[in-house]
Image (cartoon, rainbow, N blue to C red):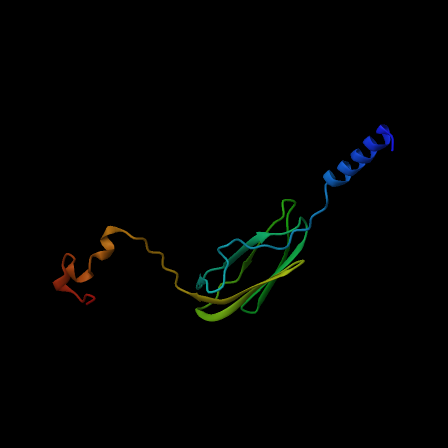
Length: 135
């Protein structure tokens, strides 16, 4: 093989290796959507995620099913109707693939942080003797 033929071969090989290959991404959910999660009762359920641009995504939860198309950036979202407390439920998301989130409960969501006053009992508070307190 001549030097010129070898150079063409190397160029063709590099061109093929570096050429963009179409990649299809699967429907994805953010990490906040996971098994055993709790959603706030009597509030709309906002579900969002990522997919191929223009891909149709269907979300089902508590008997409600909504479909939407991902935008040109691959982002999609749906607002499912609010419901009463209960569970466990299954949240399913379908596009080119399927995602199932199991053991989803609906109820009251409380967020607490480790503040210094969390070690303070209610019965030690001001006017504790005047009312009912936790013991």
